[in-house]
Length: 532
Ligand SMILES: Cc1cc2nc3c(=O)[nH]c(=O)nc-3n(C[C@H](O)[C@H](O)[C@H](O)COP(=O)(O)OP(=O)(O)OC[C@H]3O[C@@H](n4cnc5c(N)ncnc54)[C@H](O)[C@@H]3O)c2cc1C
Image (tube, rainbow, N blue to C red; front, side):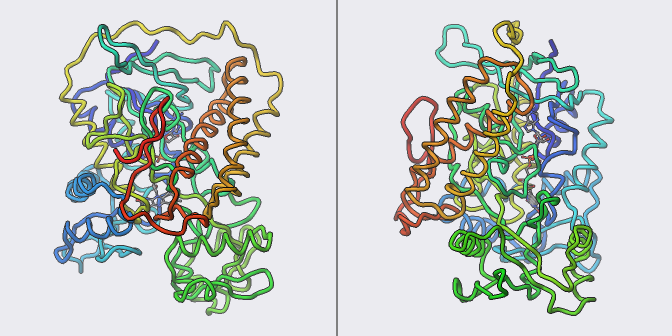
């Protein structure tokens, strides 16, 4: 049995920030992470982090931009909280040694870029590899910290909740995690447990997310009794490279910004017939148009063509994309790039307050796993990394204020009634089936019929995987599939409830938007409630 003051599941930006903040205050911290310290969406972030840093920018302007993107569903308190703490979050990262791109001509000393939906230049970045630079810097500090133990190649299975004496509610006291190398489940005791497991993009066939994004934290929180909200709002990136050997490679929107056109296999442009802004329409409009054309014509992909631009221009502006595609046999200076839209970001998640607290005592959720209210029905670009840092810092402050209580000895993981799985094919088959029907039925454009089909299938899958889980020894794939099925179920339930089109949820059966915005909140074991 391992014991920490705080155990954090996940080593993305949210998890690492929290670990460092707590360790600075002499807390003994354990980080449980599925693979290596650097696996996660945070390391893949390209654009940067939004924060009000320039003199001509203002907190009010950033708040307004966020509220507009969120289509009436942002929680104004949470939005103000995050935006007001933006400068402090960036200063903390700089103090940790993060080397953002400099610009001595800018009054801040840093280069600030502007992204879609932002009224000002406010994206601080490290060239086009912000996430990697930030994560490498924080990881170095983590390794040097005596108060932090990293348990890599450990997959958290479930948090452990114990009834509090004399009270009806339960409190979290740690978790079970599968040590992949030892093939053994460990019991980890902690005063506080934090879910920082990132998103759930792997629910879908196409995603820009890394393999670790299987919705584990959301599923664990739900099973422990937390409310989950707004799961229907999945942001799809319009252009992800479509190639059997290229997993999750984003083709930046700048290609369209620089004149790239979207075409069908026969070379015909289709965006002008969908929106007067054609290829320059917002992300969700372009993603919907591509989805429409693919479904209508039964296509595997469409194409993004920038080959009409001079060769030097293409190479100079898009060196990474050019190199990556060339390695796969696609010369983007001469031919179009095959692309599909892909699941990119989950706006919903475990409901938390402004301190990252969930409904279960001593259990917190931060980062993409949480639903703080910041993103509403659509995420404003580059707000998510900011949210990771701000909420990690808020959770750290709250945890530091708590008095420590005696821990109860926890039951060890019981494997006495399970055997080794007889047919691994059940897992791989169900994994494929799930991701395919979620893509086809609960993707960018939804209809009642498609959602009902998805619900029917998910119920069957749920039963099958549940039975498998009860009878066989856990493995990484089984843990992930169990969580994917539950997360997909939560997405479908939320999507069925939202009988309107708003933000990222678009239904062909309900094209109107309700006059009053309401959150979709799911409570374990209770009927769906709207607004929290
Ligand atoms: C390609 C791409 C580009 C992006 N660009 C930007 C950008 O420019 N700006 C921006 O603001 N946002 C961007 N985003 C979104 C942003 O990167 C994520 O929202 C953010 O990094 C999430 O951070 P996190 O700490 O919550 O989770 P992650 O960074 O995803 O980390 C999750 C961690 O949890 C671990 N984990 C998961 N399940 C378990 C388990 N069961 N047991 C143990 N460990 C587990 C994972 O291994 C990982 O370490 C981008 C996302 C992608 C995919």
